[in-house]
Image (cartoon, rainbow over all chains, first blue to last red; front, side):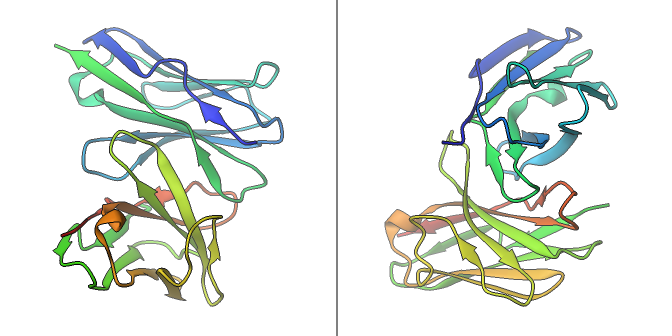
Length: 111
Length: 115
């Protein structure tokens, strides 16, 4: 069935380091992927998205990489800051219908 | 842009009460809204998809008579938890999407606690 999972449940980094959060998906028909950030007690916040016809997309301090061959998605955060501490979810979309969320990775940034 | 407002943020009520949660897209028209449930330290589980002017589509295992959804306009969807019981206590989150090829934008959730 559809499954989007994450390799690392918790990632601890030092402020200023670059962070990489990984996500594996199993449905090769997925054509749209989104990364969300969720802070405690709040709803998910859109970070960046990528369509299946691309393999890389950059935003402000964030980069998403998509490897369709191995069904792998990653989120890179440059110069990680304490305010980046949150749970990060990848989500996949098939045919622009519903989203399937991964299990989430908690990012802890130490000053 | 793409702001979604959810109200109330927190509800505490007695067992048997029905609770209505509102989800509004403030600066865009949302043809589709989604309702999710999230348990502590877990991911979001889709409950139903709500399209303006039509009946909601519920995910398998979600009771449509328990969780009533109304999407009366392009900016408002409501979820009513009918005759709520302690097992319905959870974090309910809505999202809205401006178009099929647009990302979902989420509200800040409603913490529902049934005593």
